[in-house]
Image (cartoon, rainbow, N blue to C red; front, side, top):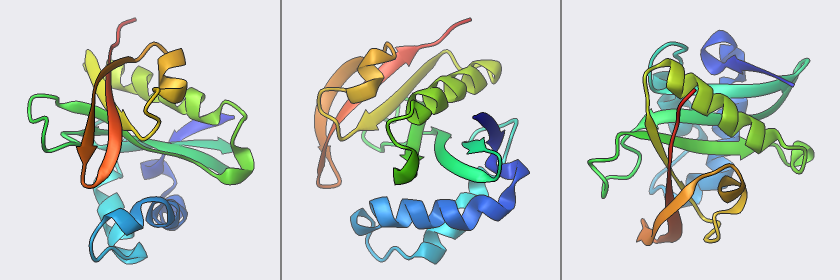
Length: 155
């Protein structure tokens, strides 16, 4: 497995948009695959936030994760977030998500980020707890119960 930026392989954008729409489209009023695809244009960066890291194995796209700003409007003071973590069902259970999270943390650190946040529907923290993330609070955000977590990152 290796990592690239979506910006470096734009032809993967349609696949990522489809994944995101299938996973989170029902939560976004009026969402379409096309609206998700257009939104991904903002993430076609490799040296500034927002960006998307893609896990690949040869030509296979295994999964993706975002580094973004201000993911949850109820937390205007929390700037940097990991979001959009998605692994193709064929590759789940193979440490792809964990590897993506660690890579996004590394990229964040290289961009000067010291603290990062995320939200997960796994109310016990799931894999994030095993990666050293700390629970902040459980909230209902846009009709979904989520656990908000944070992590200080350093070399």
